[in-house]
Amino acid sequence: MLRQSTTLLRQIQITSRNLPFCTSSSVFGQKSYSKIRYSKRILEIMSESSEKVKTIGTHDGRFHCDEALACFMLQRLDQYKDAEIIRTRKDDILDTCDIVVDVGSVFDKEKNRFDHHQQSFSDTLSSLRPEFGKNYNVRLSSAGLIYVYFGEDIISAILQQESGLELDKKSLMMIYRMIYEKFIQEIDAIDNGVPMFPGEPTYTINTNINSRVQDLNQKWKVVKEPYDSNVHFRKAMELVGGEFIEKILYYTESWLPARSIVETALINRHKIHESGSIIELDQFCPWKEHLAQLEVEHNIEGTIKYVLFNERPSDFRVMAVPINPDSLTCRKFLHKDWRGLREAELEKLSGIQGINFVHHNGFIGGAFNRNASLEMAVKSLQGDYTD
Image (cartoon, rainbow, N blue to C red; front, side):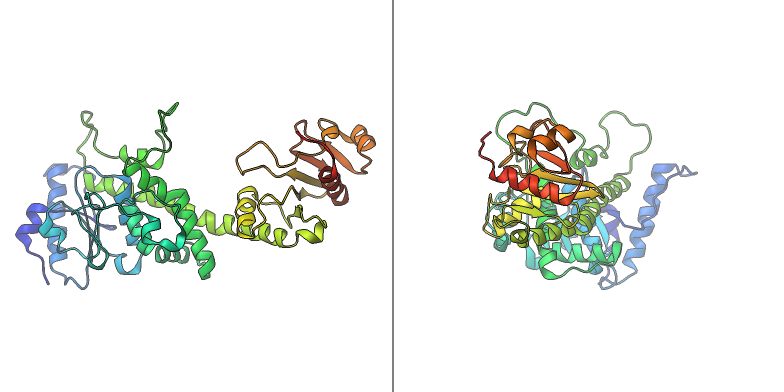
């Protein structure tokens, strides 16, 4: 079905992944020439059938982080990779689009309409995906809506495109949850005006991804050159999309392997010491957040007191587990009598050959061999002292 040329030429703005924009002046002038290129591209689209060129609809004017990310995510999927992005608020044009985000006052998954501004909308990740539990209660933005329904496919597509990786179902669901918690939820909350906490903040953060996308909009007064909203919307998509990809790669290539190392150590804890309160990592990795989550999953919250690891030969560490990943207070610090001491003095007092140091507050200590680090943990565990 071909589009009506008079309607399109009069009412729509188009941004495409490969759409050429004028960047130099000509006999027509930069702004006029850009409009001519738009008109030419519109006619090209109309010459193709709707089956060949899909369209993603979103609003024109000032843009925001959520619809920029929503459009970026959709274009990573095979079915929308070559789709044109139509920016308009005209309902008759939006009705012709294959999928619409952040505009139109309609949320209907079956019709591919994903707006969140209407008064009737109150959905969250928890309400639409109850399998993820009841803790995700931030109202979704258009980015969140697209992620809810297409997130697994988007993650899989990006991993295949960027690194050739393929995740099993369990791992994919873990990455899906973490990307929502650590990236999408922030965008949802800011777009919907949800504060991080009650009361006035001590300071504001103005360099987050939402702020940087906002800065790409036209300045109300300072105009150094003709401003093309579509070009800048594409920049916004690339900006937020680039960070989205980096998050996915981080949690897949770094976070997920670290979790596996910590879980293996947790399962083998009784092989390290009969108490089950000491774990040893096969190799050093970030472990605090993983340990807190895995203790809950294994129903042993608060059990692990010390973590052993070595960063290089003859450099072994024993670290006390904090009461939560961000806390400086530990479940049980290293032995009170050893704190702030080093080498010969510490070895004499502790009776442990190969002991190296204990930090003055007792959260970490070092040894020259594995046996010494394990003995440090065991003696601290058995020590009769409180902090």
